[in-house]
Each structure stands twice: as structure tokens, then as C-alpha cells.
Image 1 (tube, one colour):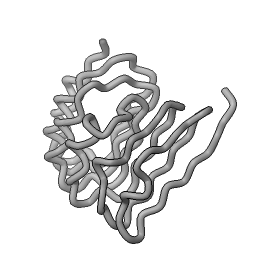
Image 2 (spheres, helix red, strand yellow; image 1 turned 180 degrees about the horizontal axis):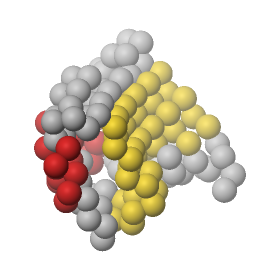
Image 3 (cartoon, rainbow, N blue to C red; image 1 turned 90 degrees about the vertical axis):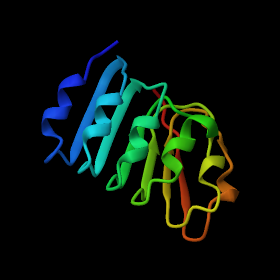
Image 4 (tube, rainbow, N blue to C red; image 1 turned 30 degrees about the horizontal axis):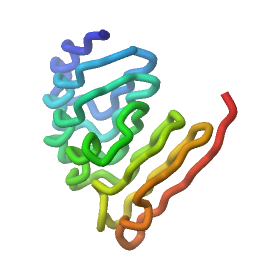
Length: 133
């Protein structure tokens, strides 16, 4: 498991954080980053998104591992979230975002299936791209 405990020292200023190719990560320390606008969790496994629930300025999130409505529920109520990207192919269940307006969901990956897109609110869009890797 990778360790990102030291990110808290930038709690007052960090707006962008990329955690890339880090295996499994406990993102608990990210909860202290109240000014965070964009978070990239690329090719990184995260089992619990609850630490992100208190990030009022988070607008863009890229994530590889969270795919089902239950694991996405903690971020569904983020007031500033405008874009969420899923970067690896596997089913993505958007039911947690039912009724959400103005959300752009980008889904990449081979053989990706999106469930619940029809539940999104007005102005929301799902963009899918199949890539061969």
C-alpha cells in the first residue's frame, strides 16, 4: 500500500493532486485538503471514497477503481463536482448520481459498460471511449 500521509502539510494551498500508479492507497489524508479542485487517482486502487465527501471545492475527479453506486455514493453530493472520469475498463454504475445536473462523466477503457446514465439530471452527459491497451 502506498502512503500519502504527508499531503496534509499543503492543506491551505493545494488545489491539484495526482496520485498515479500507486497500487492501493488510503486517501484519508486527502480530507484535509479543503482547497482541492482536482484529484487524479490514476491506475490507483481506492476502496473508500468517504474522505472526499468533505471537499467542497472539488470540481474534477479521475478515478480507476471505484465503479459501483455504493462506493460512489460518498462523492455524489459534492457541491462543486462537475466532471468525473473513469480510466479503466469495467462496469460503472452511476445510480448514486441520480438527478445530478450538469455532470460530465467520461468513461474510458476496453469493454466498458455504463449503468444508470439515464438517471442523471438535466445537462449531464456521459462520454465513452474505447481504448485498446
